Length: 81
Image (tube, rainbow, N blue to C red):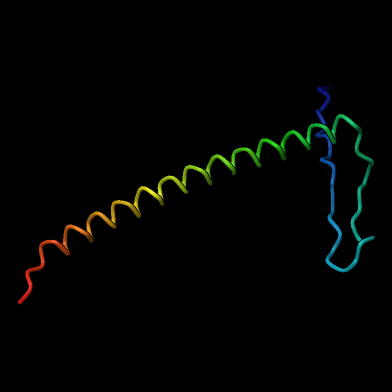
């Protein structure tokens, strides 16, 4: 009879509730390698968010410049009455 593979249960990390510092629960302690891996993931995410923010800011600045140019050209085309 074939043996079924059992899935390893994922670690559950519950964060403390606001105002209740001891309410967070780790079902098993995290190893140093787990903490290093999680830190690396956080740094990658932060780096990706920073890059995305920089690109959005550049796009917004470019759009604002375009809007100002369009407004300026419309004002030049208005003839005084």
